[in-house]
Length: 457
Ligand code: SAJ
Image (cartoon, rainbow, N blue to C red; front, side, top):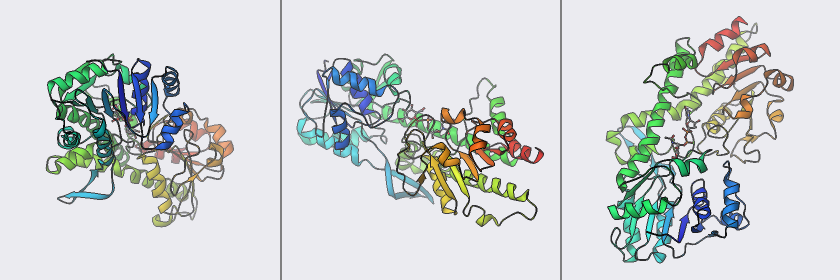
């Protein structure tokens, strides 16, 4: 099947790279977004998200004359839906006392409805947004069939999950294997033909519900694996062990690959998608539920660590020691990093934000520095203008994201710019001896040995 013109609904982290990649490969693309800021920016050749290499591909796509933008779809050979599927903010499900989050399919519904007036016989529609199992069949197909056309016979319908890693989207879009789930084998074949335009990885055809499950299974597996790493960090602190050392030793086993603990799991994928399984079948998903619970409570573990660091510090002063409840009151904390993971500007569902909020709730005065989004306005968070502004008057420096520029900080230089003499590393970026040598009490998440070492040095 040949595709001369396609319409991509949703110009975010997935839709825009996909639209540009199709365009530079010779397909006419209309990018559609309900956010007029995104459309207006694209019309001027600008982008409002940060992804390595994206600006160049977008510029190339616009210069090729193949990429244009509009707030509304038009007739096309194929329609791709790449809109967000977040969870509902204030509504929860409950199973046996287990409170779980619910998917908000509003954007998928409106994007699908927007296609209906333009849908023609022989068109292909692909849903790319991560969605609960059976969404393509139970939600998308019935909406599209309001056109009077039948899914699978009059038009082709597929689910094809995006599986690209933020930070490496443009490369992974082309090189990763692509799963195409059709509501009929013919639909899968049509989807195959579309993605063959630029995908160099394997393109595998299956049914739509399998493809939906594949995507959620991948992210759920990662979530569960991070949860166990976080639980190991908690255990290591209890038993006087350095979890990072223990993990590196365990990973010498040929069949073990433990992931890294940290302040929690964020982003718009791994911290969201497992809930789609829990919502669809709460009675079958106690493990997935509890992994989510562990990762969602990890910011609290970080806050306990901060409190303990202040307590240790005060205990070292004769007559020092404060009641645990007030230990954070008016303490000045420099929080380094708000992004959900290293070297990206995406602040969505970020555990670092949650840590900052929790610290403030207990009376701490936090100044946050996010080098990838220095102008970000975060509800209730005081953003620093620079690293030196964040650390200048601080009592404690708290590293929350392993951005490369934080990893390479020189403790001695930092010591000369700050009043803080306590540093906490939640992501294993810094070397204990260097920070201690520079005069800091140093603590690392999951590492009981670093805290013990402070008392010796
Ligand atoms: N994290 C840890 N420890 C680790 C690895 C990650 O705490 O060892 C944290 C990160 O800091 C971050 C979160 O987990 O807060 C998620 O980061 P990530 O790099 O694991 O994944 P995402 O959300 O950026 O991208 C994932 C990818 N899925 C898998 O690796 C299975 C990507 O391929 C998907 O396309 C993407 O989700 C998506 O869009 O669904």
